[in-house]
Image (cartoon, rainbow, N blue to C red; front, side, top):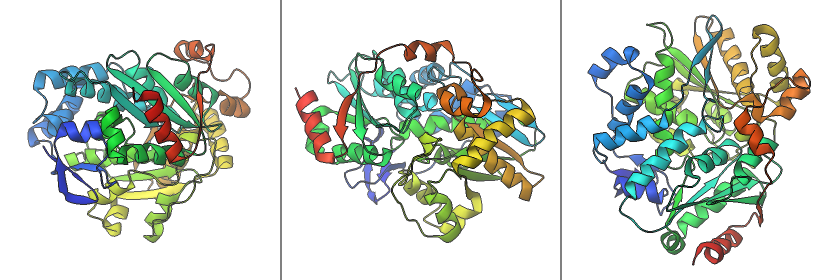
Length: 435
């Protein structure tokens, strides 16, 4: 299969180029030249397939022309070593738990798949692969975990100073080895722009063999579509879910749209955001106006210029009318988010993280207008990653820290301070990694 740039459909590359170079030279994003559709045979049996079988079918639809079946099955099986269960809080009110992986966040699915696919694509290459990733919270930890001690790779993580939780920061900064963390004096949008600038410097990109682990990389998006299909099959037959997606960079929601394009029956998508609501505003007005991000307690969603918006547009043929027919957007502030954390615990004895709380509020608002709908809210991270927020609402000791996270909390932080300037970052890359 070939992949084209969203900025120039005539610019086409093969799978290896799309995944390892990550970003086209025109600053677009790569999309499959033709979106696959899963066969009628798959959709006859999909409710009886397990998670790995579903994941393999999706991966084969996208990558089967380029990756042998046995290798692709090994990649999928190694990715899906943990489940994504649907928990029912009340009739029509469901939660998809995506935090059962090693770093307690949904990013584990994409990061683990991507690390394995990249390892296969570079199996005959003796060059060091440099993985760049900007994070607003969970992406960096998942990528660090997926690539830690992987031979032939080094990972550079950029994160905004003071804008991730303490335990999230330890996941980025405490591993060491082939993982380097840069503490950027700016926002996630600054970190993302710095990473993109490095890729657009083609000489530097080639010299350092750069690749991206952000959701600008298709290898991150495709595996996230696995759990949409897996979640829908956990509802009663005939029920078409409304997926409610806490959204920042909009990779997760784009993955859900890919699942729909594959043939998954979906009633609707709801993009749930915090104050960083550029996409909900677009869905209401048709005007897309990125702006600087604002800091909130749902920090992984603090994105003012979401990269994957251009992919969403591409999936709907650049039609605002078509997009809003399938996607709605709702935003909530921190006060409402805090109230939701208390309300979910009081009503359902369920502990929800700040991002899931935003999603739950959006699901509640949707069902108020569509009482027959069955919503599935994506719970994207374990509440233990945000102990300060949770304990402020529910009291000291209200959230238990899993052992794999508690161990990291005791380790020292190692991070390199970095100005939020593209040239400074490029110079650091060249000086520090160029030899």
